[in-house]
Length: 137
Image (tube, rainbow, N blue to C red; front, side, top):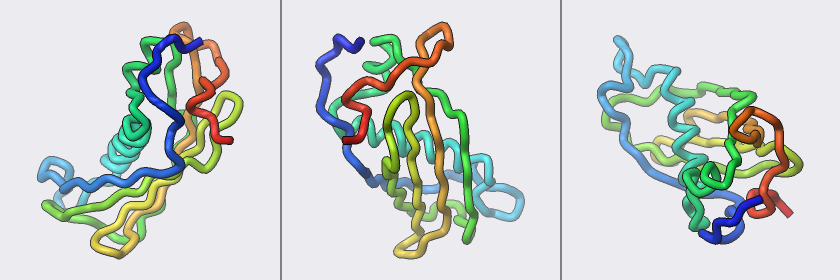
């Protein structure tokens, strides 16, 4: 059980802005598809941080969150130096799993939609229940 008293309940959604770095682009000058998994992780991390918790706090308490499913729908490409806005939303967080949705916008245009499912495990890989503060009500 978590003994860390770092923060409150995880918010339902959180938004961040970031710029596309040159190293994230491919030969066509677009963001390479593999980078979206990293963007989604950034969104999950900042969602947790928005409540005063951190992944470090969660892991120090013996709970690891591992990705067990990832989906990504590419609508339009982004390029180097584009300023992107990503909204991360908790769709479900019960039992041992959290399902998050990601929407990435260029200006006000939706360019990528994705979803991940993470499962809670202990350091040995055994599935464990989510801590209360990670669960949706």
